[in-house]
Length: 162
Ligand code: PNS
Image 1 (cartoon, rainbow, N blue to C red):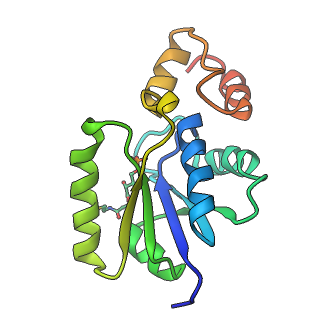
Image 2 (cartoon, protein in one colour; image 1 turned 60 degrees about the horizontal axis):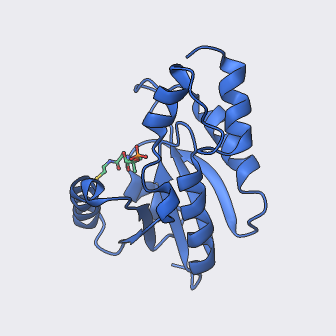
């Protein structure tokens, strides 16, 4: 394992929100390298393909020199080991996130005891923002431009009605 502190920030990012971006910016200050890892989950129905999600993420993090974007399939702990990461970074917005996150963190620890999960809080302004709600609001004709980066607004518009 390298001496550099590499962290993985995994998620579906369907699509990336300003809350995700806020957490990435915070994480980039704490770790030598932060890898944003997009779950390809081709089986699950996602609005954007993994490649589309990656494009939007790359465009939105290009100002952060120590952040890279990759996609992965299969077990997260396996991907983290391949990358030499010591940490999985996850955001917790509210108590309601905690139960699922706890279960996932403990399961990942059971699978790979060396890997630590670190939880961070996004800025309060983003505590109610989720990809699911962004899609719902957009689908119903609401304005999501304060909730997601500009490229996501563009790509949503390019899809037309969703
Ligand atoms: O943004 P999400 O959808 O909450 O992210 C969930 C994610 C991608 C972190 C989780 O589903 C995951 O790690 N999937 C990869 C498969 C895996 O390792 N599953 C066991 C998790 S304990």
